[in-house]
Image 1 (cartoon, rainbow, N blue to C red):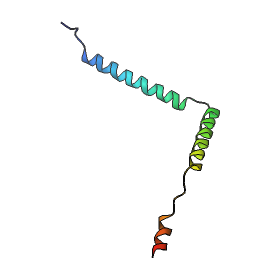
Image 2 (image 1 turned 90 degrees about the horizontal axis):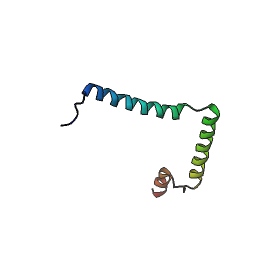
Image 3 (image 1 turned 180 degrees about the vertical axis):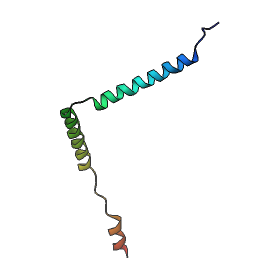
Length: 69
């Protein structure tokens, strides 16, 4: 036969594990210095600007609708 499992203890262990994962994620997200946050923000801005620079311009739909009339 299998081992007897106390469901209350198993449930609490599962909750502790989930809480530990959330704490690790928060440490990564919020556990950085101001300089590190600024560096990440600057890198993200640069990436967004590079992506925007490669986008094609599309004609404005309201201007195109006026030309058809």
